[in-house]
Amino acid sequence: MTNGNRTYHVELAELLHRQGVDTIFGLIGDGNLFFVDHFRSLAGSRYVGAVHEASAVMMAAGYAAVMNRVGVATVTHGPGLSNALTPLIECAKSSIPMVLIAGDTAQKDRFSPQKIAQRPLIVATGAGFEQARSPETLESDLYTAFRRAWSEKRPIVLNIPIEHTWAQVEPSASPQPIPLVVPSMPPDPEALDAALGIIMSVKRPIILAGKGALDAREPLVELAATIGAPLATTAQAKDLFVGEPADLGIFGSLSTVAAQQIISESDCIISFGASLNPRTTDDGGLLDGKALVQCDVDVAAIANFCAPNATILGDAALTATALTQWLRAAECEPTRFNGPRTTERLVHPEPAGTAVRSGTVDVQTALRHLDEILPEDRTVVVDVGRFALYALRVMHAPDARSWMWAGAGFAAIGVGMGAAVGTAAARPDRPTVLVAGDGGFMLGGLNEFTTAVRHGLDVICVICNDGSYGAEHIQFTGRDLDPSISLFEWPDLAGMADALGGAGVRVTNQKELSALKAFIDERTGPILIDLRLDPERVTSSE
Image 1 (cartoon, rainbow, N blue to C red):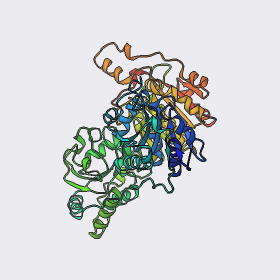
Image 2 (image 1 turned 180 degrees about the vertical axis):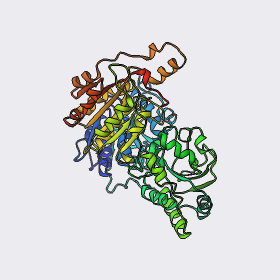
Image 3 (image 1 turned 120 degrees about the vertical axis):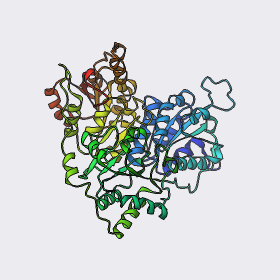
Image 4 (image 1 turned 90 degrees about the vertical axis):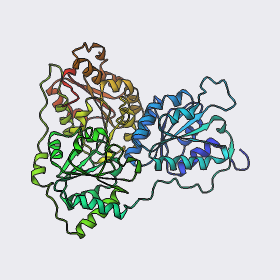
């Protein structure tokens, strides 16, 4: 170095560190190894190395979800980046803010076997692309990538040509702060007036919160008390209202039986930060005959799937507070739809599980038991699969920021373990509970179990093992066809967990299920609970 300059890769690591980035997830290659090496040498910085690039992206997604900040991941060029495409699609669809620092092959190296056109590849996923323009624009390029990730709520790939790595740059004397706050948008008074007219005329309203309302819990609870409304959430905002007596849980096709009955009796849905997609509205059926008030800060989300009777473009918390103030000023009487008749129905448990063949346990019974015996202070990550329909109903987290349905945006199985490693790294003070299917775990979980072991992370893997790819099994059996190609004889998952440096246990009957608490309480590292299930008794409709 000369004249006090630094190399590009050193300045990149230093800028990230000075801006408060404490954890980077990734897999190194010649496009990113030097900046990662310097970053991990900085005080308070941590690099979590994944086994696969797809998992690295999901680790950053898990971190972002739990910490409510931009996650950071890194991969190398060519196949390193192409391996990350599925989780980039997932994170784009699920509105997860992330910066993925990707290497790119040298511009002059026309015949590199790893050379691909990286921009169109990324744009096709729904993620954003930010080209590192020159060594001199490093700080500006990095700032722009973070600003876009947070404001656009999606992954932004910062694409850095490999020739930048050893270029000399002048260190930043006072780097720009990475923006993590977007100004809140107050609601329009005329829109509030239209919504108030509807709210004051109905008798059985329900307040529905989506992912866009995660920071509006208290104002929404206050509004619900003012108008006498039960509370509900989308799947992505699950457990936002945990502890509230009139919490219906998930609104939609994943609702409990009691919640479905109460929703059917309602005459108005007041939605905050929810897209109201077909899964939330059960293809629109749950909105039939009901007035709909939709509030969202994203204009593209309003009236995207259904036609509301009144719309409010604005921040969920500010809107809920404004509505409450106007309703109290008007001396609005609460409807009592959230009263004893509703709350008494919610305390009754879901129907008991069904009988199963010898050597297996009932999935609903097993997950409900685990919900009771697992540490109460926990993060819960659920992968995609038919088992998730049970997990979403009977398992809970302390709050909405402690919950993640990984893969739901793209309906992609096998990404849950990566997310679980990310949440465990973000919150090392408590365990992360992963609920996954056997197919998803073998696809993308087993390899990253070793990552949890290497980094000493407190991850409890609950594998709903019916020896099949469940959705495909249903397709075959539903048409009286042979489902054998959807069935698998996996190796002993519990034994593999032991071999990989963790601990595993197989659960095949009620006695073994009842003995799980001691196994969980005595854990010293990552553990795996292999729930053996009957594929004929795990459905997608119960």
